[in-house]
Length: 330
Image 1 (cartoon, helix red, strand yellow):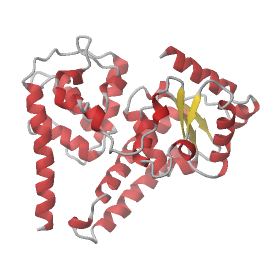
Image 2 (cartoon, rainbow, N blue to C red):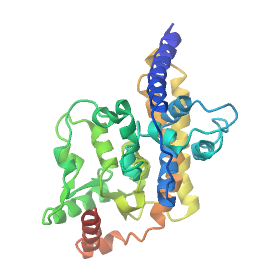
Image 3 (cartoon, one colour):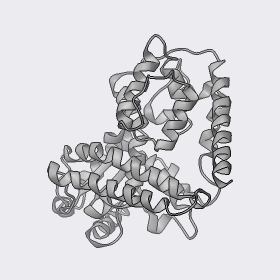
C-alpha cells in the first residue's frame, strides 16, 4: 500500500508536468542557435540537475527508445545525447529542451532568448515558476541589490577567519556583502538562502577541505554552476588544505561523495518507502555533487586565485577590484 501511494504521487506530479509541456508544444516555436559559451552553460546545467529532475525532463520530452544510454551512464553523457537528439532530424529542437529546463534553471542566467524574448515567455504557465520556486517564508531583501555580493564558506577555523576579514574590509566599501550568519535571520529558510547564493551575480567562494566535503557548501557551489556563467560569477579564495591541484588528491573528493551515496542508499533499504520523505532528495543531492565535483574543482584549479596570504596582505584589493569590475560590467 505504501509503495502504491508513493507511485501514485509520482505519477500525478509527472502527469502535471507533461500537461504543461503538451501546452508548450502547441505554441508557435522559433528554433534557436546558441553560441559556444551558451551551449557549454546549457550542457553543464543539464548535467548538474538532480537525477530525479533530469528524469522528469526526459519523461516530459518523451524521447524515443534507444536514444539515450542507460541510467548507469554519467548524466553528462546522457545530457549530450539528449541535445544531439533534440537538434537532429527526429528531435523536437533545442527550444523544447530549454522550455522544460526553465522549470528548474532560469534561462536568463544562461543568456538564452528567442526573438528578443526569453523562451519561458512563450508559455505563461511555466514562466510563473520564477515567482513560485521558493517556499513561502523569510527571504533576503538585500539579495536584489545591484551592489550585493554573496560569500560561500564553511563555518569555523581558517575559513571563517578569512571570511570575517573580508567582511570587515567590504563594510568600508560601497558593496554589500551578504553572509548567512548576519543576513539569514532567525527561522530564515536555509535552502532558499543557498539558492539565492546560487543565483548571485557575484559570489566569493572560500574553498577548503571542509567546504568540499560539506553538503550545504557543495549545494551552494553546484547551484552556482547550474545557474550558468560559473567562471565569471565566482571569486574563489583557495585555502591550503583544499586538495584540488593534484589529480590523486582531487579524486578523493569524488570518492567521499560516492561513499556518502552508498552509505545513505544502504541505510534507506532498512526502512519502508513511506518513511523516506527527504532522504531521496538527499541522495539526489549527493549524486549531483558526485557528478559535478570533478569538473568544478578542475575549473577552480585552473584559476589564478592568489594565496590567502596575498589577499590578506593587500587587504583584498585584487578581490575587491575584480568584483567591482564584474558588477559595473553588468
